[in-house]
Image 1 (cartoon, rainbow, N blue to C red):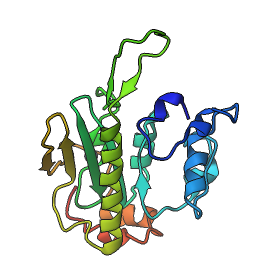
Image 2: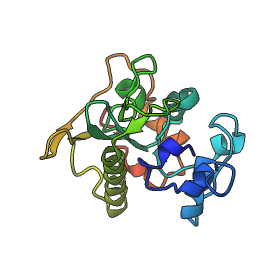
Image 3: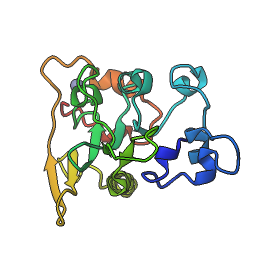
Image 4: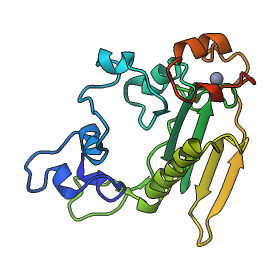
Length: 214
Ligand SMILES: [Zn+2]
């Protein structure tokens, strides 16, 4: 946890960034302390074989360090979602349900410019750090994802065919956009229905994969 995380995250406190404690804490371990049922790995995804081999009901691809998105897409997970912010004052929610939605690799190609945090340069007396954020955007992205998880639990996740939602907060009145995004022609990420269901056999949500394309 870095000090720049404190004004844009709901999870972290000053002590997590090293104030008073003397050392910063690992983000995943911080999050796990707030989720009593959660386990955190201190390693990168791909370097912890136990985490790679484990079965998951849903995957939230909230970071892309070391090509994590492509690695997660290859798992053929039935339900994968993520939320992010953009430089155009947007909080974005991305749904990727196999058989209904596009894959995360088509939505955010690895070689495309990455969606960056909502940062702006600010003038400071001490110019060692010039990283500022728009805190409501990150909070909005988190809330959009929390609502989507609630819809998943209530059985309403696929009530809407829209798999991309963006809330733009550049004006006094927020503007919401919703779209249906599809895989690019020739996408090789998604396997056939039978294959991906065999790979993701233990997910409690595997029946959501209707094999309707994607
Ligand atoms: Zn695709």
